[in-house]
Length: 115
Image (cartoon, rainbow, N blue to C red; front, side, top):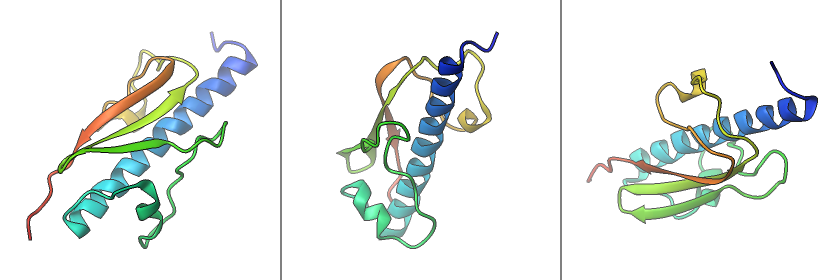
């Protein structure tokens, strides 16, 4: 069963949040490869050439949270309406974006090349 129209809307918004976080993560990894360091904030990604990455929640407009944890690790956070479905969607193929409802954070590691 698909659920109510509101549940479907929330599910689509959560899918968008995961896609956004995945795209942000890819941009962070590219930035780190180019600059040999993690960006200090998401605004630094907006100054880079290439496609613009969504940095705000599609429903609330609140910015996604990004924190540098160490020289090679960072955290991305978003607030989800529903828990992720049992089956992994195609965008979860390479990274685990499984989440519960509410604020969830995902820690990622990025190998930084030393110049």
